[in-house]
Image (tube, rainbow over all chains, first blue to last red; front, top):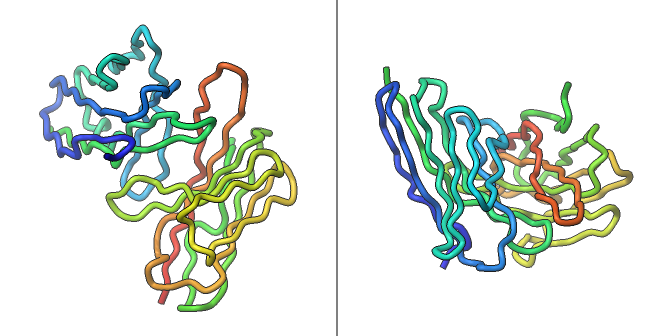
Length: 109
Length: 115
């Protein structure tokens, strides 16, 4: 079983739509969780950390479900600029992170 | 202001010809990482330094070596590049702190082509 698993998508949505996707992680002892955004042929960039109580940053909402070992990302009012690959990232051991393979989101006009 | 800098951004090398990629950071973070990322795949951790302590991943080929002469700089040496080593190489840093989130900050990457 992979440490972090994501639905690869692609999620193809119109502008203004809401899109949501999950990732699951295997290690119940994981302590910290993140969503990174990666544009084509660019480096991953931290989108948001995911806190136990869930958190929101503008149009982005992240949730953590420890019991079921998944985290989610919801994007409201999608913009063309939200088109990217979203990487689910989990702290597994110490200060090393494990990355999912990414969920591709394409927002169309 | 650039925080994690990688040079060169693009590197072309010949099969078997050694190559060195460099990374520098202005964040004063104590941990530096090297990842290899191939198309449509997750970044794969090759090794990392916690200060001067080197930590190799078990499945990192011996062909890959690293040096960290000081806090700011880290190098990735590929001794004999093969065609399968063509990839994006990402450097990242993080600051270890008690009870904190170990978020990592990435450089722009070096895209390696092997001919």
